[in-house]
Length: 79
Image 1: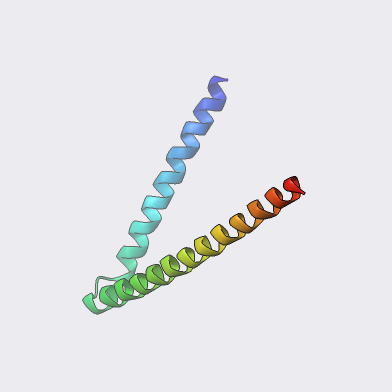
Image 2: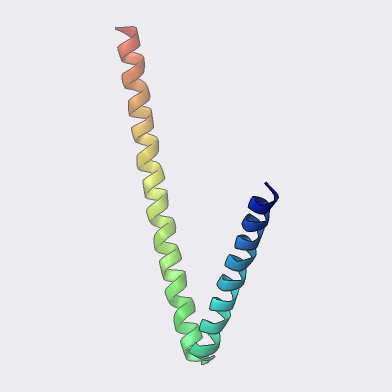
């Protein structure tokens, strides 16, 4: 039991270190050109805006499908 917990904690620490180190290394190697940073920020903002719009449309569609399914069940029970 103790070895399982130790492996779990060790794995979590290793994954965190790898993720943070990889991000730092990628940022360090890519340089800090202000033009590149601004381009990346604009690209990220556009992608985030598109995701939010798409997700809102998905939620609206899902709400309709849930409403339609609920009505079908109610009509089936009433019949």
